[in-house]
Amino acid sequence: MKEEKRINKEESIITAAEKVFNKVGYKNAKMEEVAKLAGITKVTLYTYFQSKENLYMALTYRGFQKLLNGYYQIIDKYKNEPGLISSLALLNKFMDFSTENFVYNEALLNYFSTIRSADENKLTDALKESIYFKKMQDIHNLIFKLSAKEILRGKSDGSIINSFDPMFLSLHAWTMIIGYSKVLAASGNEDTTIFHIKMKDLKNLILQTAKIVLINNIDIEENLFEL
Image (cartoon, rainbow, N blue to C red; front, side, top):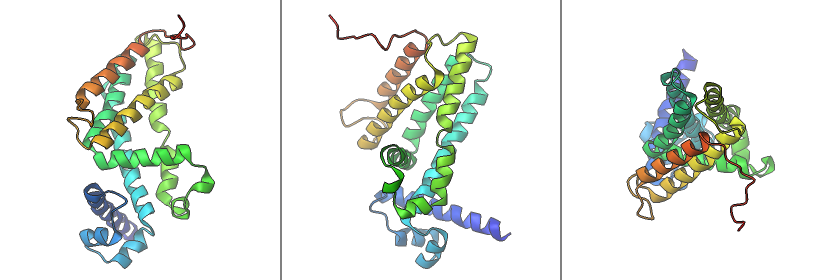
């Protein structure tokens, strides 16, 4: 019962933090504001989350779990469809997730930027000690593996022609997703970007580009600049 009570309290704190981070951003957020919204004292808050970084990582973990659940739903929904369809649906799911969950989108961008660009010696002590950071490290490659698995299924059923390794193609899709997510984060508006371009048009172009890549054999060693 005590463990269940603690888990419920943690979830309520993370929910409060999500609202604060969504309103003022991570850098401007104060633990006092989170505690007040959660209906607890600052001292109590720190007994659950010893730092703002740990709390933000808990929020990141919640967001990533939500994304993963969305991936599994897509895979189940399209299990009887060609692998090409499910692969594109996963790509579309991530972009929809980024659009619909602005605070999670920013948190995941920050997380992947941290782990890809910084070695372990550059991580803060608070981050190293965060149990949620460890949890994220255990599962953050799952989205690549799930995507690669659906691409491999598409190769098997003939709907995907591209001969590249499925993980390579999954990473290629990831580069497009990250670009979309960063433009979305910079614009702060799901309808129009800072360049006055509709995000839905950008999303459709990304999906069309991904489809072209998957249904064709493309020579990446070809020098397009040779005359």
